[in-house]
Image (cartoon, rainbow, N blue to C red; front, side, top):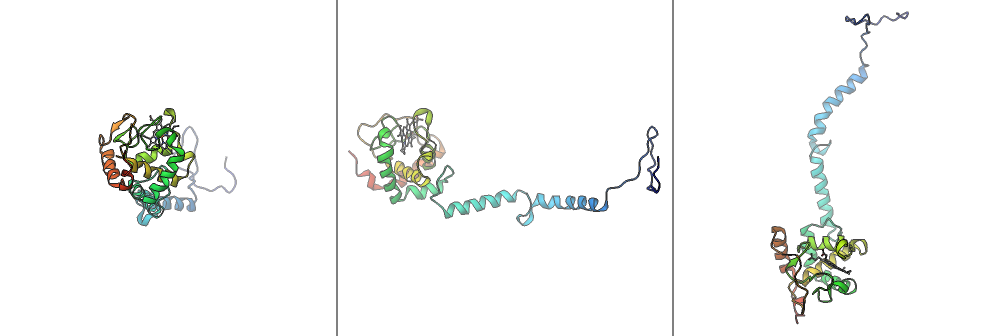
Length: 212
Ligand code: HEC
């Protein structure tokens, strides 16, 4: 059935008596389609950081690193070893951490960190790793199943940082009657070995004066 005025060309083929008009997509649609084909490699290769290519993640990482460098005390679980190295070497942080430790942690770890319900925090043995970042993570996330509260929910990020600095400073203070070592010797893994070295270097002489 041909409508009046329907002079569009009919295509050559015919299937079971069915024919079809030659009905191309509108020109604007085809142009748009071609534009998307041209744009696709541009997006893939992302020159000059436009598009969705791999560079986007690099740009993101760079911006995040710049932000982290500008805000060293942000805390949270995403602290870097570099940030923690600065914090654990900061005497003011250690003093703040000491005050917090006295009010929040001594019930389980003892005033000198020798351990009670919680493990000894002064020795070379760690259940959850002895690097500043690992200690930070343990304090922040806690070990709820074992009775260590997740202090990240209770305290502010900079307080977790200060506590980490203080706990690191407790290393090697040899309190009297410490709890027997728990966990593994720091140095068993390369990560904690580097951390132990950093911790030892960061431990200020001030805290070693209270040896028994
Ligand atoms: C209610 C008791 C309790 C309190 C309060 C507590 N802890 Fe703990 N803590 C524990 C226990 C129990 C563990 C051991 C967890 C395990 O066995 O996995 C632990 C483990 C830790 C560890 C990891 C030790 C390791 O060997 O890896 C650190 C670090 C730590 N606590 C720091 C703190 C700090 C800092 C505070 C104060 C903000 C604090 N804890 C308060 C009970 C406590």
